[in-house]
Image (cartoon, rainbow, N blue to C red; front, side):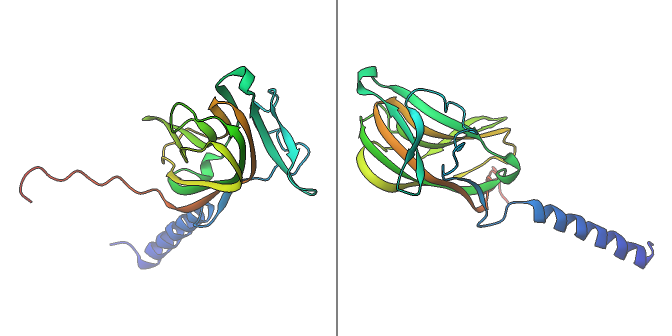
Length: 196
């Protein structure tokens, strides 16, 4: 039979390790990503930022935003930026992705998932996943665009995409953030086929 003080030491060690793991894990309410485009180099972390029609613009006298354009003369197409997100803050979480968006003459796209993009794209062994608020197009003043999604516990990549897809028009983005709102829901086990 093990010596009781030794058992206590082992349990204390295990509790300390568990606490350290939990301390590093994202918690409810943690904002794991934020972009307000205020810095002069605010587009440095975004792939595609050097494309025509993508730049920082003044939103107010004291704040900036991201501007993306696809001219009507160019015909429907895509123009967007993306940034890689830190997986250690996202795996196995439920998150709310949100931001302020303004649009002008964004043509109705061929599919509900095209148009203005505020999208979380993840890659996991079971494939690629895209999450967003669908049906965003037209002309509107600043308004929130938001959605809730889950990030796979085995995700190997996570990207935030902002821009236009399969459409034309002009769009502005600001105050983008991703907040942890819970743990990823586990998939329910299959029901047994026979009597229980």
